[in-house]
View (cartoon, rainbow, N blue to C red):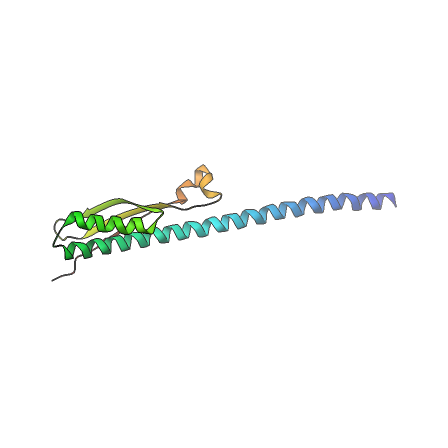
Length: 135
């Protein structure tokens, strides 16, 4: 009978270790899921900001009759209002007056941003081009 009691005690320790391992794995999956959602939100926010900024720049360019500085300020104002993103590129095509705006941002993650080989996933960059409406 002592042998049966000894096996039961050993199994209880093993079950506890397996339970802790499963809980740690579940916690890791929850953190990675949260990080994936944050990365998706950041990419959407950056793409949306680029689209809004290029549209606003073209609208200002049309309204001010080709005042390129005013168009840049309008795009910059839109990007600054979004928060968490920054304007990294602004180009006006001299032939067509099409405006290309490039915006970048960074996702706030719990784990992915701290791992060197995954840091590239945290950064988001997007460009959008808006054309002037034909007369």
